[in-house]
Image (cartoon, rainbow, N blue to C red):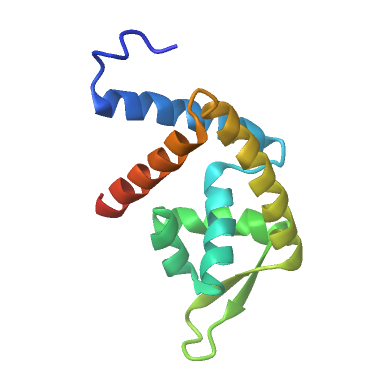
Length: 141
């Protein structure tokens, strides 16, 4: 429980709840020997389709040098494939593999469970409104 929630700033509440959400997500993902950024890579490739490694870095908000290590683990586990861009052989194209898509589907189910627990204190219309507000805010930051 957060102390003095009615007097806390919005930024403090976002930070506190974000930390709690990250803790819960990290614990769930650790069961699969993954971290939140691994999940972000899988989601971005599922959403965007095959993409250059630089684009994936931009989509997940991670320095390209750090993306290499994330992709290395996913590639070793057969969740992501690496290829060479036919138009520019210096660029690496990443794509989600069948096992990667399968795992992502299972992870999304578990994410729904984690989110439901986090948002249990809100009725469904408030959950949708919160998601909408956070989406709009994220688009402006």
